[in-house]
Length: 335
Ligand code: TXA
Ligand code: MG
Image (cartoon, rainbow, N blue to C red):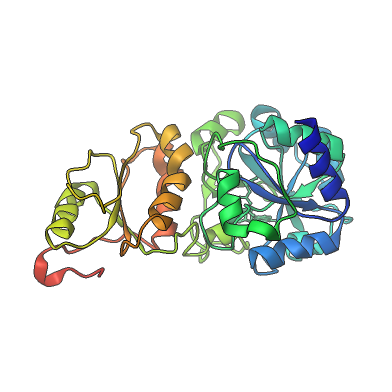
């Protein structure tokens, strides 16, 4: 592995782009002190220039290289959840390039939990920017193969660390105000954070409510190329039956066993456990999106409960809102 790590570090030092594994999703890495490298990240992702990037570091001590006025709360959270799927928004250090932060005076920071990437960061010795390694708005990659499919040769090197363990992006918490706010949900839930910092958490879920620029809060995000319809669980079977009776080729992500006897149909039976569901979600969506020429993807809504919230958030963004299909033959609309 040392050979791959040395190559990755060398590419980063030379201003190249290196896709790297984390426990959440693969990141598109560049030297956070090299503006030319950072601007390539925006270009390759086709990401709007005012959408800020996250800095990945190797140790808690390195926070002070990127942020100032670090509240005790941040250190408590770092000690509890790092390395791990939590991104903290802190007041930005004046030396940090405005290109990274979209001219905001705050900065997003995290220590990822993946041994290869942690070693790469240690050997590199500084921070790297790391948005998810996908074209802007598309499904995040959870394997080196996904990165290859989406960005291919535009990336200088892909450090292959296998399938991501968590599978959805980190929880983001803003701690630049008196009241910490969760800006993006993840497998570290509000309850987990509340256990460490007490009860004063606010949620912000839509761009309308937020004055902060967070692309994950745009209405459509994490989206397959095919239209995705998120339907209520009690309607799901009737809809699938109707589509199949009409001979319509849709792909399905459901908790239930496939009952359509048609080899052309792709039907994935998802796990009932939210951690396993999250781990496989983007792999399933990539598969449902790219395997055949189905008209769209129909996803059964997961159950309520705090452990499913981050997943429901991703699916809702991917579908551009919850959709209830009227599947009676005369009103069947999503077609
Ligand atoms: O799990 C993750 O966080 C992955 C892995 C690679 O670490 N990274 C990731 O990066 O999801 P990205 O860029 O796809 O999403 C980071 C989110 C973006 O929505 C970005 O706008 C937001 O963090 N963000 C970054 N800096 C911010 C800031 N100063 N204020 C508010 N939001 C910020
Ligand atoms: Mg992203």
